[in-house]
Each structure stands twice: as C-alpha cells, then as structure tokens.
Image 1 (tube, helix red, strand yellow):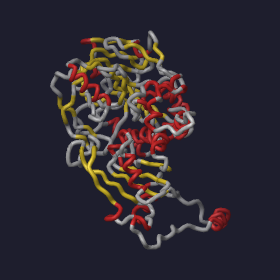
Image 2: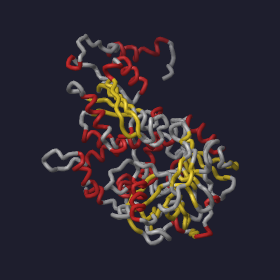
Image 3: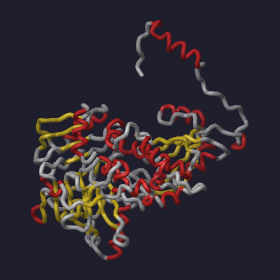
Image 4: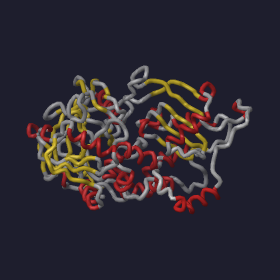
Length: 487
C-alpha cells in the first residue's frame, strides 16, 4: 500500500475498521476505549472528532495477526521470512557466514531494486508551518494513562543521519510534548538514534531530526525492525512493499522524509542543552517507566497533508497492538537467526514476556550442552542481547503455545542442574535489574537430558493417543451427541 489512508480504506472495506463519530478526549478516554477493543481482538478505530484538535485519530491499525499480514501485503508473515531466506541463499558454492551475508544485504539484487525514490513535491507538504506558526498542542496527541507525565506521540518514525558518515537511520522513539514547539526525545542507549546523538555531542554540533507520522504500513513497520546497521529502513520498507518508498526533502533540515506521510515534524536536538525530565510513561511492560532526563527536540517546522490523519498506538499490559508488530519481527527474522544457529527450529516471544523478558526456543538437539550453545548464540544477535530469560526445548514442542512450552519445561528441568545465571545488558525498561541497563540473564535447558549431561535414568515418553483412535473419534463425534466443544 502506498500510504496510510489506502490501508485505512482497505480495512474499512473488509469490515476491519470502525468509525467513532461522537467527540472523544485524547486524555485517557481514547486509551480506555482502545484498550478494551485491543484486548478483545477487535477492529482498528478511527476517531473522527477529537476534542482540542481538527484532526482525526487512527489507532489499532496493526492490532491482529491478520491486519499485520494485510499491512505487509502477505497472507502469512512467514512469507516475508521465506523471501529473506531465498535472498540470502547466495550462489557462491560455499556456505557464507551470517555476518558476511548481512554485509552484502544492501547490494543484493532484490534489495537494490527498491532504493527510495526522491520526489520534488509531496502530499505531506501541502501545509507548511515554520517558526512561531508551529503549535504541537493542536495535534490530538494522546495522554494515555493517569500517571503519564503528559501527552506522548506514540507512533513516530524518527529520522536522523550519522554526523560522520551521513548514513540514515529511522527508529521509533516516543516523544513527550512539553509545549507548542518542544518535545522530549526518548533515545535508549542501545538504539542507533542515541548513537548519532553521542557522535554529534563529540563533534560539538546540533543533530538534525525529522519525525514522520503515518506513511505506508511497510514504512511504519520498518521503523520498528531490528535491522543491521548498514541496511537503510527505507530500502527495507521498499523490499517489504515491493516498490520504492517515495521521499521528499524536508523544508528546514537536511533530511529526507516519507512523501506519503500524514505529518512531519522537523527540527534539531542540541547536545549542549541540558536534558529535561521526561515521563513517567505507561509502557509496554505494563508498568510505568519512571521519569528520567532526556534530550529536548526543538521543532522548527510542521508539514502535513491538508486533511491529515493522526496515527497513534497505545502500550500497556500486554497483549497490545505493539505485540503484533513484534510478532512480525519474530516471523520475518527467524531465517536470519537460523543462518547463524541452524539448529533452531522455531522461537517465540509470548506477550507476557513483553519481547525481551522471555524467549522460547525449539532446537534440533545434536549433542550434550547444545541448549546452552544456542542460548548463548542468541544473546549475541543484535537486540536479542536484551533477552532476560531463554527457555530451550526440543524440536517436537510447539513453542507457539506457551501453555505447552511451560508444561514441557517444568516437567523436564531439575532447577539446580538445568538453570544458569550470568550478567549482561538488559532493556532500559527493565525496572527489576540490579543496575540501569545491566542485570542478570537466566538460561533454562528444558530439553530431554542425555547420559553425558549427568542423567542416567530412563526418560519417559509423552502421553499421546493412538492416531487411529483419534481418527475414529473424529469421524464418530456427531454420534456421541456431545455437540461442539469449546477450543
């Protein structure tokens, strides 16, 4: 899809979007409505009248597996992973290393055919406001939870360039609106945007920033994807949607922004300026992330469509809409994990683990200690380093079902023998770690134990019904008069 409104029209045509025509408040009310709808697996929402603003709000656009797949133009998110797997099957006559293949990603033919396309004019610049004309308080920015420090922009695509190399990056970092022309810039230390800021600080210069709201669904997703540093998010978005992303020059900063976005904020962050207290914020962990000091983003221009739509999301106790964005990452990047750890059959990050707290991994176990090798390897893969608990199981376990995964794991482990602890980096939002961004990892080997691993008893078989009997009962079920059973 070319832009957000095409996606909204498609969802509405399929009965996957509901319009709310009565006036609602962006302070708490939209969150409470949306939270109930998300938890029920309900539709995307389009709030036509939002108090204090002339712009409508679109939310929960990616809030189910089906809508996430629809956003990326596939029947199953695994299809994109298969495309990547085929893309990385380089015909060199030898097995390339994982890093070697990633290093040539931008040069590969299919990716190279989707570079961003520069245009001279764009819908997102139909209205241009600069300087004192800018007033962020006119946007329907949500205050999501009662103890939030203020209204937060929750679905921003934050664009920066490396001050030394000029390489572009786009990430999703929340923005607390402080006043008409300033916001917080919530850069976590592990993210590329924060690295660009640190480079600008060393060089003693301002860092120019553009924040896009809306655009093609693939572009929005790409801003959340854990891509290799040398892969441009706009190129990846083009790969996902199978056509280049259109970019246009920003008006007051030397950056390119999505031409099909709804709204763009242009400005800068000055490393010489004192940080400002940002937060608290009701976060995707289900807890408030505490107030802390972050850089200030100064908005020098606001450009938008004449009839702009304000896109938003809410986070909180899972499952929320962001879980389905994370599910896309899980399915799309599984082949990349398999490239460096081919024994991985599948992995899953259930919503209760809020991405980084719990990872189930199913492996084809080949030797004693194999579980620890795989877990250690995963912790070396990009942002997987933030995983707190990794549970490794055998290949016959359906780890997409957490109930089955925990049932098998809790049957298979002897806690003293099968659990390992060690220190490492943890997520900025981990409020339980011993230090900020530094804490403890736990690896649980829940695989069947081998004699070489110190197990000299007989391992029992799992209880399973005879297939012939299962088939017989399936065929005769209507005869028993028991009716359909709840799944």
